[in-house]
Amino acid sequence: YRLVAASATADSNIITVPWAPANGDGRYLVQSLDGRTVVPIAAWIDNQLPQAPVLHTTGFDVRGRRRPVMVFAVAGEGTMQVVWRLDRAASDLLDKIIADGGGIALRTDGTARDLPVSDVAVITSASSALWEADNGVSTDRVWDLELTWIDDPEPSTIPVVWDVGEVDALLAGSTVGDVDAMFAGLTVAEVDAIDWGTVTPP
Image 1 (cartoon, helix red, strand yellow):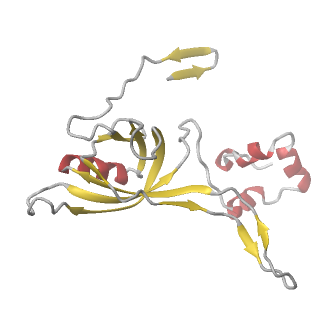
Image 2 (tube, rainbow, N blue to C red):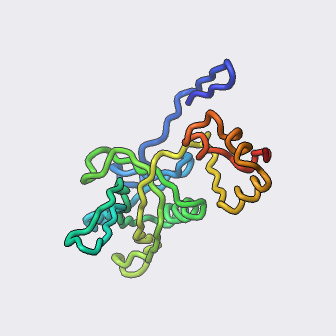
Image 3 (cartoon, one colour):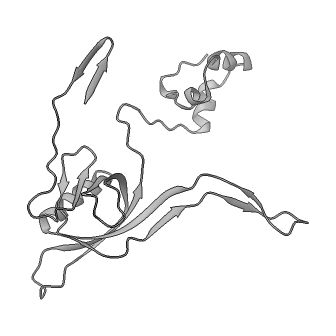
């Protein structure tokens, strides 16, 4: 990792993450996004890895036309369903990741079906049941998870969400000229990134 502050630059030592604990299947590794929690997968149960992309293209029926008018939009990568068997300790670790928001890094050795070598996801649905294949004495759990694929998080970027009412309240009493001056020289992306909690009314 490299830290850049003002004119100074500092590089960290090489950070090595163990590939897989001894009690996991050596082809898969699941981590929390900070890399500190590693979940060994005792078995990846084949469910054919169903995927469901998110389609944003929309059609509108127009009177007098036999076919709809389409508005095209980029599709989202959507979700994948996975089924994992985890031992009791690994289940506790996965519970912790879910409680912290569900962000995971999934890494494979490149031979795991059509999965990428590395990707980032959020667990958006989770259920589990005790494994029944050993006459009812196992503490392993079989987890049925929905993973939603996401881009790499950017820890240095502060996500801020403001609603229209809050912005209206901030700009109450401002003239059009005041608002124009506030945004002068800014790109649309820069306006989108404004942290309105730090803005002083014009």
